[in-house]
Image (cartoon, rainbow over all chains, first blue to last red; front, side):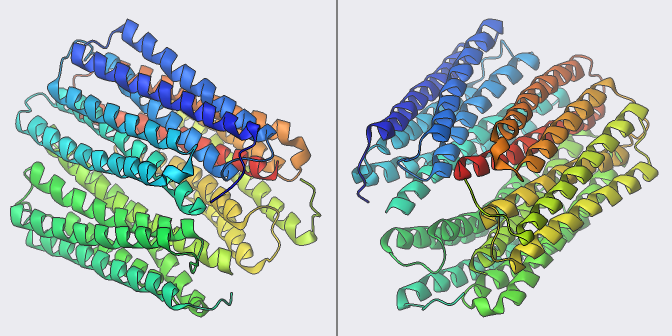
Length: 209
Length: 209
Length: 209
């Protein structure tokens, strides 16, 4: 488990820290939109910028992978971790867009807020796990974060089932059902993707362990 | 292809045997529910216990991975195999839940039975492939099981197309269509996931081959 | 990055060339169907043959993997690349089938044509990337193709959002919405899968780099 950390290797950890921070920002922003019930063009624009700033970090990581010989973990794990973490933010942005294009842009919805809160917590734990990779001696802490992301994904499954049940019970307008079913399913998919990232982090631990 | 099997390595095979047995049990149970047309709270409860018992084996495998130095295959393959096999059962449980929450809990449906039969056969072949990994000299047999899982997935695609076609042809109530389309698609996804597991098993063979 | 190319290794590249050609053929065919607005039994039959011919190459690649000791890249990357590239064609075929079974077989739809054009371009770039793997000195060119596939996937996301928005705005018949939403989402999924293949190609470059 011991390996020397060359200065260049620190760079990857710095970039992952940036990724963690920006992804957390996007998740927080999505929760704020949900609480305000506002998914207008200004919200879309703001989320778009956040997503682009995550893309930049991802490209920086991949670019550096191509130019660096020694990496702190397997090259392909760094690649997957960056790529999948970025996908989490892509998915959050996609829901934000979907809310506007379904003209649900003024729909304050308590169930969406509950999803947004789960997503925020999950991304925060991911961020913590990814930051922790800098110091693998803290593997217990990283593992705990990964387990928590998995737990939140289970909560997300339950929440999705609960809200779908309610949606279908109260349904009179099929278009309403189609739209909200889509939004809830996508929201749950964000939590699935978070779990994928946590699993990559966990498998890095296993390989190094 | 030769490697000595230390006692500790046997443990992984024992755990995979347990996984195979429990997953097969869940698939059989789902078929029974489908044939009886009963997806009530008792059924949900029973499936929940089966899913939890698969989770336990998965955690045991991952836990052991973290504490074992020598593993019969690449650590990450053991991890993926356990994780994805467990996902098959998660998906079977998810459909079971969905049937209840869509209030289709008393809907005996011949097309669902056909899916349930495909799923049972696919999981049985997966179980056989996973059990076979204990003795890689039997690689032809493992390959045959993996090919069969792939074939069943193709049958599942055809079945999904057939039942969707029927569903849309006879549709008058959009809510009915939304619900059953969802169930059928999920049922086909179980077969996709079985194929993923078979592909992991096949790739272990390729690496060792 | 240097390695000697034994005659047997050339075979893999020849097979990937065949895969590239056949997949491109399938994508072109799907565009032609979309432009003609014809998804009848003859079209289904033709696409089925194209999909089968891709399957044959995939099986040939996997078969050869099992019988070849020295491979130009990691065995599992060759496996994934073949498998996922084949999935692109599976998905194109699936949409073709879906058009018929939804009885949209005489529906000329400009938005579907736009998707079909994106898919054709994406598969062409994939084909170019995969062909390029024969000569890794051209890694800049391969990278450019992969980046283009990623760009086309983003265009696909935007297109999906645009057409969904239009679909829901003009919707009066929920069945119409359910069907076309499904078709558009599937079309976008083809572009996602193309991106997956491009990412595998890119990760081969990274590993060899």
